[in-house]
Amino acid sequence: QVQLVESGGGAVQAGDSLRLSCAASGLTFSAYSMGWFRQAPGKEREFVLGINWSGGSTSYADSVKGRFTISRDNAKNTVYLQMNSLKPEDTAVYYCAARLFSVASSLPREYNYWGQGTQVTVSS
Image (cartoon, rainbow, N blue to C red):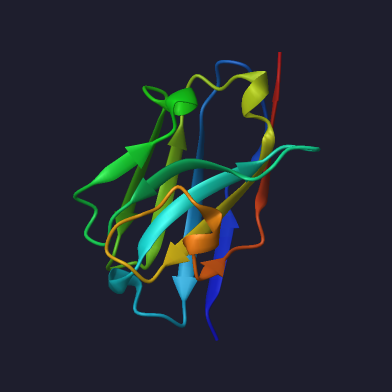
């Protein structure tokens, strides 16, 4: 079956960096665009970044532009989220998601598979 497994979360200080990974199995990874979403307590799940099937095109939420980057390695079936200059408002559970379409979407409902999430906590 399809599995998306996130790793790399943790507790850091404001201004620190973290790199999240999402390892995919059970699917033809290169056929999927990938997205990273996050959900803070009491808030809706929100789009953070997306990357198309080849890695040649990315999209960002304004709140993370210039601080976060997304990349993928189709040979390793893995997508990455590099988070720099972290802020307390970045605290959330971060999820990766796979969409059977060449281009990523900012809408959670358009994704076919989800990981279990990894917690990121940023203290001031």
